[in-house]
Amino acid sequence: MKIESWLFLGGVFFFLPVGIVYGILTEWQEWVGFPALFMVAGLSGMVGSYLYFTAKRVGPRPEDRVDGEIHENAGVIGAFSPWSWWPIMLAAAAATGFLGLAIGWWILYIGAGMAVIGLVGWVYEYSRGDHAH
Image 1 (cartoon, rainbow, N blue to C red):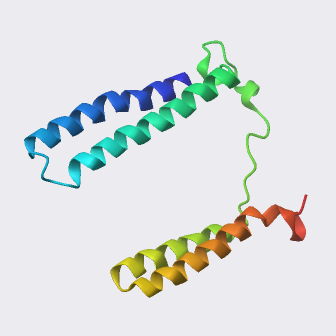
Image 2 (cartoon, rainbow, N blue to C red):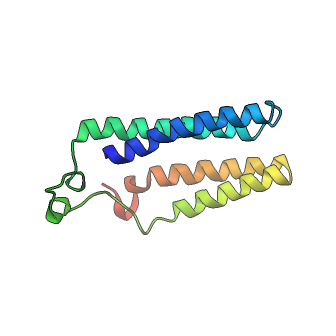
């Protein structure tokens, strides 16, 4: 995971100076470009820091070592639920929320309600029904 973390941390050293140069060239008057570049630098730093500290805690993975074998990474890697319908509900809630931003604020509240229902359903998916633990 060290390579991934250094790739993301390297983004900070790229996007931060680019944001400063962009701000200077636009005389700090364009209020979308340089804040967006600063946010990309911050997000890149957050992802890189998470991957770096996770790599220190977990240790080298088989794909990080030169002598790593394919069979070392066999088995269950994560828990995925391909039958889940809740991500579709959350996508519809996000679409409704963005529609509310474009058309009217009252639609945004409908999207927020849908998002709460979808999020609660997704979180408690394994707590009830056929797949309860």
